[in-house]
Length: 216
Image (tube, rainbow, N blue to C red; front, side, top):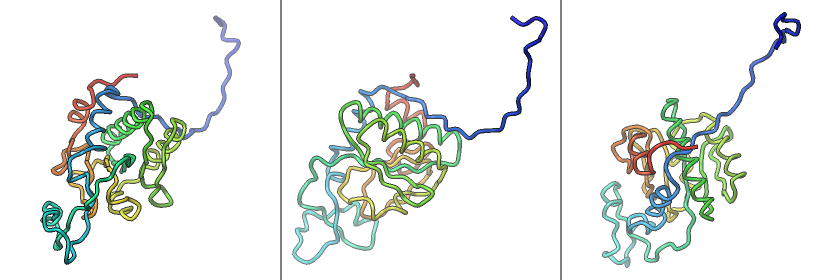
């Protein structure tokens, strides 16, 4: 269109910071199925736990928690109904693992919102642990950018334990190879790396159980 190069010009440009949003993975139906097992799980997640005191029913002893601690714990006697899912997310340092966690968080959050469900997102920010109630896609994208874009790693369960209701259905997204779990919490763990105490470990496992290939 300009064979004589008469319209050439040069302009100095400075580098700008930008945020590339994660990709969506899986299918919403399989994602919601995986999440439904967390929101309406078996009793080890369905009940909270408190320390045993004289007079408590010994049949309510939570043996799995008791075995992990020096104290005896019993299950709460009443189930939690209608509690929104809390998603806790720690950003891995590895770019590949960070992509996996970002893709998983985006896909899970959108699946919940598209099905009419709200959820709470817990993550580490530059000012400390942040807890955001997500009720719309716009709110989610704003929180997602801060969560993933901060690049802050660390076990958010450990740093923000007081912000997490003991009875809340809890999903923890992380890149840790072993997750320290505060005694009062019962998270379902999806880790981007091989992890000895995760319910899903590694991108292939997550992709397979959430529906496979990345889609637009």
